[in-house]
Length: 54
Image 1 (cartoon, rainbow, N blue to C red):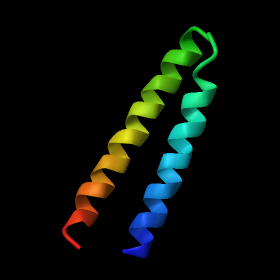
Image 2 (cartoon, one colour):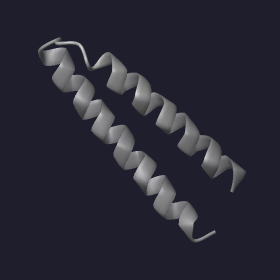
Image 3 (cartoon, helix red, strand yellow):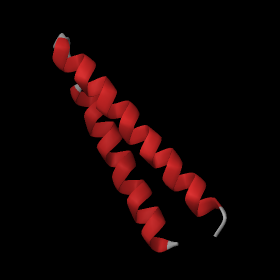
Image 4 (cartoon, rainbow, N blue to C red):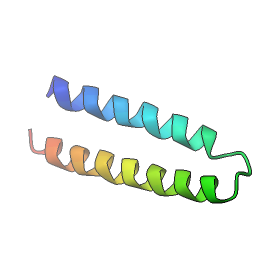
């Protein structure tokens, strides 16, 4: 269970960093950052769902 929390915390930190870097008007880079942010969020949700049963 500790590992799941550590992974979730790392994903949250990554999401925040990606979100902050995507705030600038960068055109195509902003769109790519949003796609990465969505992917990281989806992975975090999947980890949360997998660790809820423990």
